[in-house]
Length: 360
Image (cartoon, rainbow, N blue to C red; front, side, top):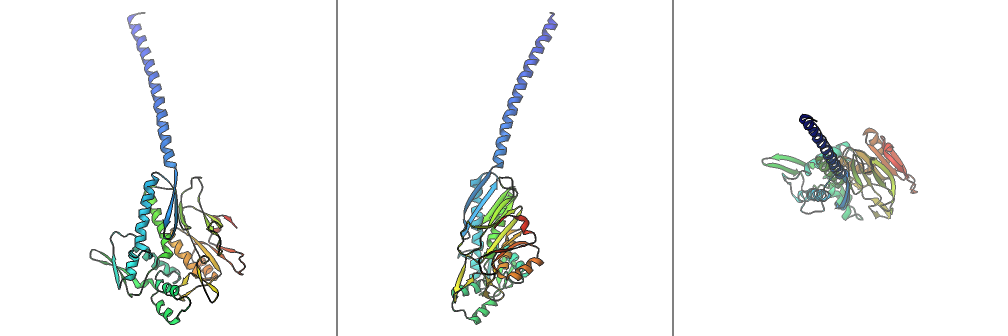
């Protein structure tokens, strides 16, 4: 073997050794990379759940993402700010201070909640021909305090205050002012608050880039994307019978990028002259309403709208509710007891039945 041949042979052996080492390193790197990607995907695809109390009821949230401890803390801070703006049960809240004022108060620059809900309340009052009216608090308070001795003249007097038009938001130098045209005028956003709270939390998740979540506050909910089973989110509607347990379900529906709210007259009522009167006040007549309707569920793009419309339907008679739904194409389910024999009947409107997975 010549020196040249020996040199070429040695170079070939070194090249082979280098290729072997390189192949080994590449396989090892690929394996490490595969593990890293697998761990990252596993963390990203993990679903988390947490719950708590808000607005006098529960909240329960399931979402796909990371850092559940941080997310829960931020959601609870968001709900705290929300209630400090809109809850009539907090004396220092924005809405309580407005109700207690003579002619209005300043709208804080850092309050993002009050103005959107007042604007939507005004719109829904028009859409429902007055059946949804968040300025009904003076009348509600009077009836709750005097349920056995109602003065019709006083009730009629208070009814003149029941209009969202009594309130306005005016731009002024340095900010905005919430004005009211009568000192006795007062707002109560309870017919919209749970739904709007769900919308606010949903917006929070979407800003985080979360595409799969379910937000449930007291049985009202918004579901976006898929559950951890890969299917659309499911929500149960309670059996609307007095004395029924919270776990007794009448319907199970699926949500996919939609919101649902249910209003009912079967859990809260008072008795007058031996007759049970529903807790829902009709802002048009000024009296608590009685109806064959036991519950109304509405599906809409946003939960505040679904919440408000469900309340408006419960203020209506069954026939009025059917007419409204024929003119306004919201998916809805009305559950009623036509004969008073506790044999429940259902009326599905505008394709609601297509979302029903289970029905008794």
